[in-house]
Length: 220
Image (cartoon, rainbow, N blue to C red; front, side, top):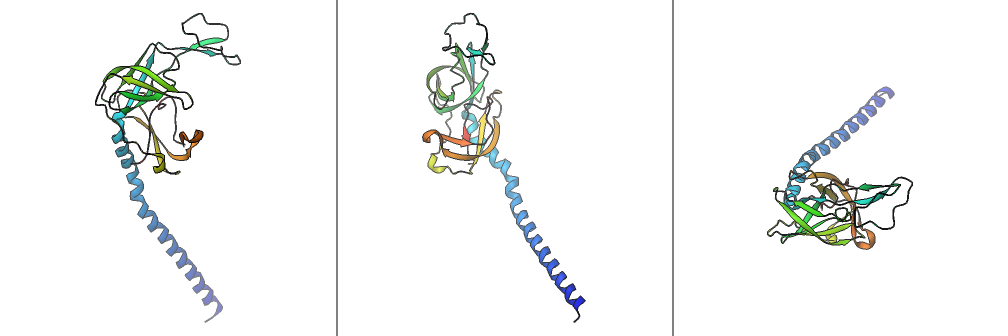
């Protein structure tokens, strides 16, 4: 057998090995495609278990003094709507999201709702019912507030402990700022645990005023 024949056989063997490896990769990819295709269905199922507990929270009549750019804020917010000083303007707050945490009308939301001293707070459930809420307390270190509405038998989601969470788990931030339709969904992962001295979970799921106060849910 001459040198040219040996070279041809060697090249043929290498080509066969490369084709075999590529087929194996393709087979592995084909095996994962169904799982990827099912991801949207899994998200929809997870959201459907929680969405009835996600509410819209609207503060009315609230305001706060906001310093213009380059100016210092006043030391304290005025309790009454007085004259605007030079370098200040009035800043209101729009609707936000909340989560039912007890069937007797206890709702957790963002402190952005209560910090403007609203004269009234309206909570809209996923089924369209509306209730006037009372501000019952705040946790300023975590930026959350507790509301109470006069209602019973409200839907409560299933909560999990931090021990069940792992960095890298799917995480979805839900919001209901746009009314009693299906919540908005932003996808991400759990990127860190026990932040702020063990009192918070970190995620890279997109958050904004649209879903402030809303829940972070997992794939289940």
